[in-house]
Length: 194
Image 1 (cartoon, rainbow, N blue to C red):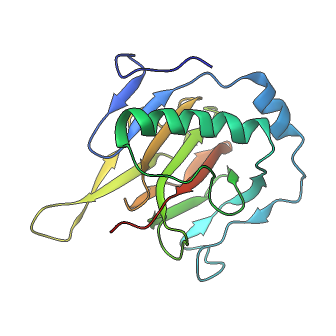
Image 2: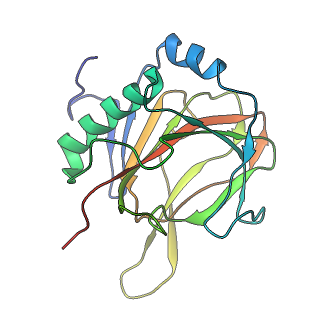
């Protein structure tokens, strides 16, 4: 796979995330089509809570083409931008394959709660763009107050959009209003900060 550089126009830098538009090979979609149809409801740390999260999920294993593809791109973006000390594997059950139907959403949350080893970097890869709503947003706190300011990440509904960001940042997926939003998400742990 070619190595992207910061000079590419498809790389967007902002204070919150690195966004890169990548071409997803057909073999990834072929592999995802073979996923067992036993989808389960997405959970949060305390269990099921549809007010916080409503989406269906399945997991991709470490031995998959999809796993290696995602890890390749996240490593490149980390090496070129964040330079976090990361372990050579994704966290727990590998990569989460998510489906958001009409009305599904995921309220504000961070990816660091309850993770051991600690999650340092998170990613979301958009697999389709034939839906409406479902915007991915990252929040930040204003200096001097605790009000959450919303930052909508550019190009969030474009197929191939890879958003890589520090796991401690609050983020959400707004409700889908039409179609099905499909994405891959994952978390990369690393040694605890000292």
